Length: 308
Image (cartoon, rainbow, N blue to C red; front, side):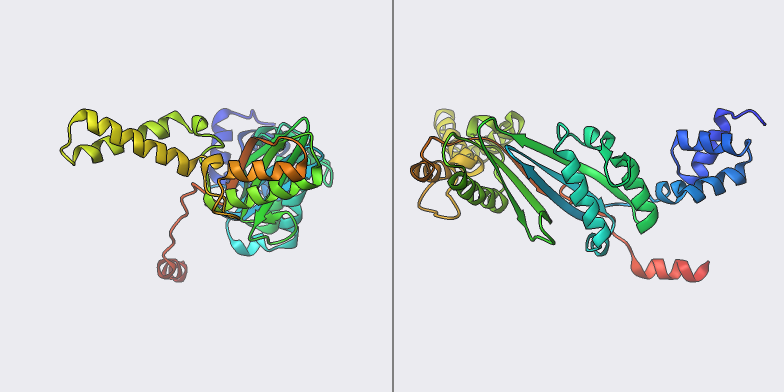
């Protein structure tokens, strides 16, 4: 058996796109034979899966699962919307969301968790699914919310199946009151979050960098008026108050009843719930948000195929 060198591992990795440890194992299993190692990786489905890792995965599904006073939302991306309609893919997203409930909700923890249906980790199960379905996939984002007493309301927009869709929302409501009534108002607030995409629950929780950027824009715009600095300062403060009203959940006009703010709507709901209500957290996950999709030239692809 020839010595497995770093250079050999690097060469195999470049040829197949497989991970470093997989390449090292393949070379060890095939006594350092490069071609045999490539075939070993292909037979295991590893080369086929990992060679696709450079392709943009911006489609897919957002999945939600809840149990007791906790709920999770996960985003599993695929390359095409067609695969997202595949039953096996939907089952995978549903299964990952279920597994996520027993973790802290982070991508790392979910990836390392055991997937009951396969006995492997979630990350290995996804890799197997890539090889089977033939498209790149990635567990991109996830979040978990919990409350000691209350409910975590959920909402899926454009649902493709139960708990699966393009947009998922979690809203954690702390209250000792009636859980059925609390769930009802919670779902309405979750629908509101889906529609308005607030930046934070409260004005003071808006990211400081975002607020500062808005303030600087308002200052420059106000200076165009030619007014004195003391007047400009008042103009900016007024515009910042309006900005916070528009981006903070509790101060927004409630989409279900625009005559009320979300805070006022919660106050009204306390009559049915029978106890005070406090929103302790929210998550809004829109499929593919922030992913730069590759633009493909179909004519060029066809021409390139003909030339092969």
